[in-house]
Length: 475
Image (cartoon, rainbow, N blue to C red; front, side, top):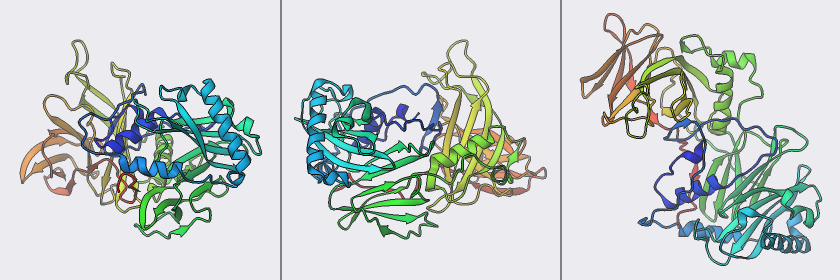
């Protein structure tokens, strides 16, 4: 689903998004849950498609620092135990270059010729031989701007250079070599689990920390220094960091999540223990597990259900901003809100809406993420989330999904002390339109006597992690 999104307007972000859309990394037989954890975006679930968007010609920003760090990685010596075997590395490089020139790697058959292949990592990990190689072009690819392509190779442990250079060993191909490269491949001895490899330029070091509690990290350097390996046996709840000199270039959650497989009945009962609204959907187990997996160690506990219910009266999205002739003007669906405490403090959550009827374009559901400071699972609290950022119509309205205490009968939205919108509450929930341009709205849940039971502001859109860092685009 992420491949259909338009990246934010900065060259580095566009380059990374475009690169990842084009890069088809495989995890062997791993089944990846179709989930969304996209900060600041409302996502429609439908045909994933594929797009490639070059940077706009009028961009006044530069990705020169990114390319400089990419070149530092390219010039780094091979890493990994097998990577110290210079004869093996040389043979593998020559075989890969010959295979590319024969056209064995269609993804690398670009108009710009490749003049050399640089092997950056080779090691035997978890019963497999894994390698990362860069294909250095004569000049940057005119379609992508990347001067070097990247390829991940996987074969059996101890595989010859011939085996590792074969097309059967190709597990991931990218149009560009990033400053920080990472890869995951299914572990052959532990179905459903993966081995992870990450690599940074020479002069940089990896550090890791257990899952932080309110931003408190306990960083320790990795013995491998400029690269990091995690197998199913060594994986743990943790965060990763890359320091280059005195500057931290990357902080990211390690692979994995708190979600067990499968979610136990006791864990599901805990997740649903404070839910408001109607009867929990049968999909609750799946959605709780999927959200936990997609958010990974950005969450410090398994998510809990905040509300389950029916939403109605949402305008149908269409190209022109209004439905075409003969199409319904509004839509409805079953919604579930999940939330969990975030590693950086506060709470993050997501809204999932399964539409009662597919849209004309085939979309069957929508979702959005949010962040709040206080615990939204508190039965006495009020939560308001914008749920239709992808379907704003010509009226300039947005729709709020508001969850209230059980005793509430009405929701009132005010701006600067003046009423903006009101709606009746059904099963601790209400949907109401508000002007899209208005900010700092106050949402109140009222009982039958008009008394305010709870109040709060609209949740921040998206669920950004305040801990994550990626500064390869800075000098």
